[in-house]
Structure formats: C-alpha cells, structure tokens
Image (cartoon, rainbow, N blue to C red; front, side):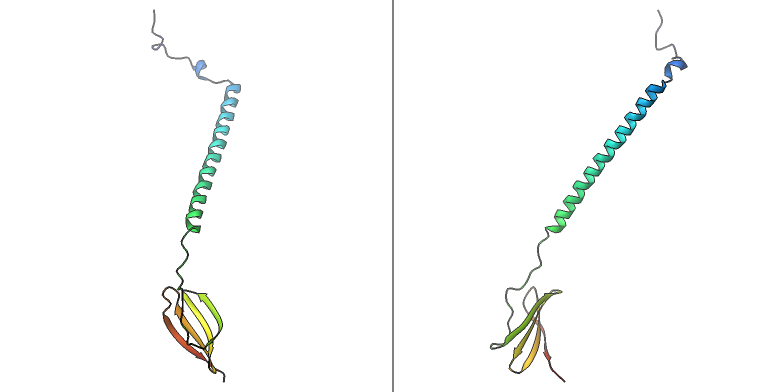
Length: 115
C-alpha cells in the first residue's frame, strides 16, 4: 500500500476548467465590491462622527452686560471678532464703545464727529 502524500499530483489535476475560472472571477469581483461598500460605510461613519464633534463645540462666551453712560441712546450694537461694539448718542456726541466680548471690559471709546 502506498502513501498518497508521496505521489506528486499530476499537472492535469491542478488546472482549472474555464467554468471554474469564470466562477472564481465572479467570486473575486463580488468580494471586491462588498469590501468597497464596507469601506465606504466605515468612511461615512467616520465623517459623521467628526462632523458631530466639530458641530457640537461650545459657543463662544459673551459678556452678560456692558456699561454705557446713563441717559445715552443706543444707536446700534454688534457682536463681532471677540468684541461687542456699541454706538450711542451721549448729549450731542455720537460715540463708539468697543468692549471685550468675554469680560465686558471697555477696550476703546471713539467719538464720531462730522467735518
């Protein structure tokens, strides 16, 4: 009795039929398409997580109150670039006061005049 492992396989046994090669090609394409869809899904989940983390960042701190002289009339107020800019009339003068948006401290006061 002979050991089947000692007998080398014949070359004809290793060759695949055209039908088997076609089936193997279809299986490879199907696997590649499935992996592509899976990778796209993982990328979409990653983008969604990054988007939510960036979107849910806390809003910037804004001062609760800024002070202008008593009896002044506010013309406009803007919150831009980390400052609160208030234009007001005090007596006969028009003033622009620039406050720090975080603390409410007066940074600069400018008189607006006509020539």
